[in-house]
Structures are given as C-alpha cells and as structure tokens.
Image (cartoon, rainbow, N blue to C red; front, side):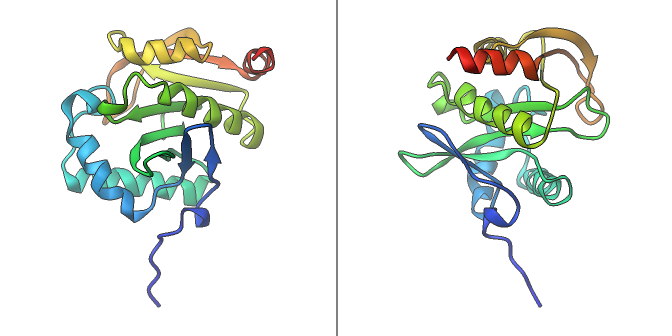
Length: 188
C-alpha cells in the first residue's frame, strides 16, 4: 500500500488568524519553500540558502516532528491570496536551548506584520495545547527584523546560547513565560 500525505490535518491542527492560515506542511508547499530557501536575505538567519535536496530534508524533518512529537513549524498561508508565504511555529530540535516559536516569512511579505500575527497564534497554541511554560526565540545579535518581531510579542532577552550543529552560531535567547504572555494577551 502506498500512502501520500497531502492532508495537513493528518499531522496536526490548523490555526487561523485574521489574515493567515497556519497548518502543517503538505507536499504542495515544496516549490514555494524552495524559492524561499533560495533567497539569501530571507534565509540568512535560518541556516542560509538551501538547494532543493536540503529543502526536502528540512521539510521532512518538520513533518517528522509533527508525526513524532505532535508539533513543529506550520506552513503559513496568506488567506487573501492562498499562497504559501513562510513557516513558523513551535520548534525544539535536539540540543536546542529551549522551547522555541520561530518564524521565517518570504521577503516580499516583510513589514506586513505577518510574523508577529502568526507567532502570537503559535505561542497561544504552545502554551494552551503543548503546556509549555516558556517560549523562546533564538535570534542573532545583528538580526534587527526578528528582534523587532520579538519585541512586538512582548519578549525580552533572557540569556545567550550557542545553537547546536548544523547552525553552530551564538544567539540571544529572547522569550517570556506563560504568565507574562497571558497577562499581555489579556490586556489586548
């Protein structure tokens, strides 16, 4: 029997925000993911440019995490156009410095507020459904765009860390605990 995974619901939930749909990856995401990963500026802080074979491995790692751990990065779909515009969500690779919600959005969608909008939904889900006590964001010191997203989410620098291979880079670990997140969300 051959089985092809084309239905994201088989792996995990679909979350919706005002402008975005967040769902586990499907095979149709591969081509736009390759274009995203080929953009040196968009990929600069998330492991660098990847060729299609590397994108395939990355996408399968994320899908495998959904299957084995019950969480991972969501594909980000712009509601208005229906197009794949990035990946974001809960992430905890082996040796990672904590329970992360990270993001990566295609460059022509930068500055529209998609990263904080999607990350906020993913943080709600991580705290509410995964039971996480802390959410972090691992951000390199010169990544001003991601620092701005973290600030919009109410996160602050908690500590420094070195990411494990293959990243092998020093980062500031931004983040916040569940109680702080809940207080901010309630204030909104």
